[in-house]
Image 1 (cartoon, rainbow, N blue to C red):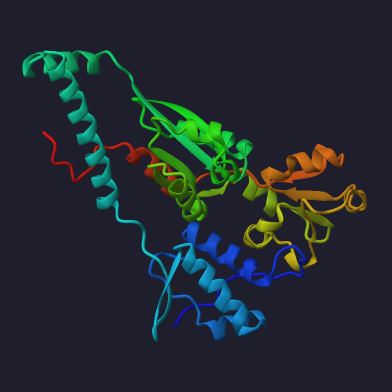
Image 2: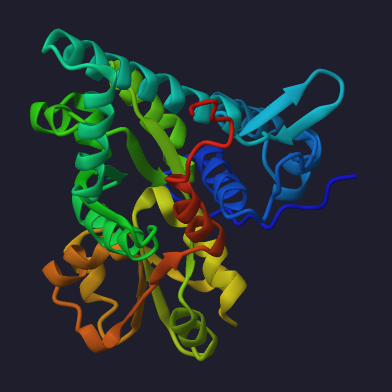
Length: 331
């Protein structure tokens, strides 16, 4: 029997109940709090737990299934989907490498070089070239992409010299010419694991062949300690993007003594006067809301940013990402 899910629903005119459920279950899956193969509560069970209509939960489950995060088996229930087939992904890299080498050899033969000369030139060039790898970082905003590219760079293998294209997901989906042209020579796309289906769909829409690497993040130790120190008797304000309300509430509930049901919530849609009414209170906020806080004159000393770093799993994933595929048949 599946365990109750730690979900928190609020009255929010901008985020329907089913999307609040989607956002929070997505966070639990991508944060590995729900492991691959874990069974989700039955639709009626979760609806009863949350006090909502069964159709609302069913719609949330269908949305998660369309994103590839869960799978439903008729008569058996809904389960967290297994990860992608790494052997298939590695095989694709091998196919592309073989084609590149075939093109190189064909051109070298056309120039009149024999096998020995080609091997000699290739060996010489390999010794004199750094391992430069272009990478695309796709996030909700360019600012977030820049932030995470610095974290990614820190954990790549030491013999890799990366160059980054920081991409906002909206620019990729719309086919922004600069974004599309920036993909020339770029094979790996790094994004949040929750965004993988959306990024993959955008890449396919624009015929871009790229391996999408979904990473996860965790709150920094400093942020967790700061949350624990918050006085539950004092007033606090939560400032985050409307799409992230449920996930951020879950984090605050897990890492602080605050009653999240009592939190005042402001988003990108909140009017300036709503911020004026919260002056002096501690504003717990996500990274993307910095400009909104600045625009509304919120004192930096009255802010607590939810800072994230890469999860241990993501660090290992990045370190292994550029390993030679284990299925290699090349000699």
